[in-house]
Image 1 (cartoon, one colour):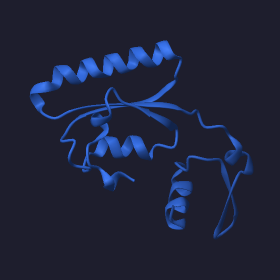
Image 2: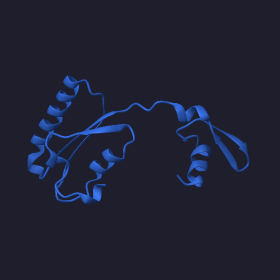
Image 3: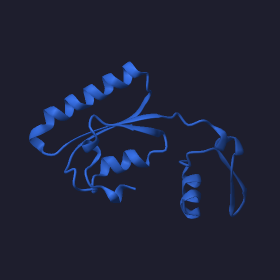
Length: 121
């Protein structure tokens, strides 16, 4: 994060961690804020290739959710989208993979995550 962004968030009261102003140019983030345990869990991801398969998308999400409950995996994020498996330009899978709370990604089939997505590293 850029220091100006942190200062702006602190000034607006939207900084996501406790902090206090030390002097005119310094903001100290509370050391206790860094030790707070972030809730970790599974992220569920469902994908279909075309808009005509929207019903399949809902059923995929339902099956994934049911499996997670039965397996005892806490779910912290669910993403479902329509997009080609050949393209890595899918915002929802990128959002899921970048979420620090998601430690495990659950998909119904491997090809739902993607077929040739070397750019998702």
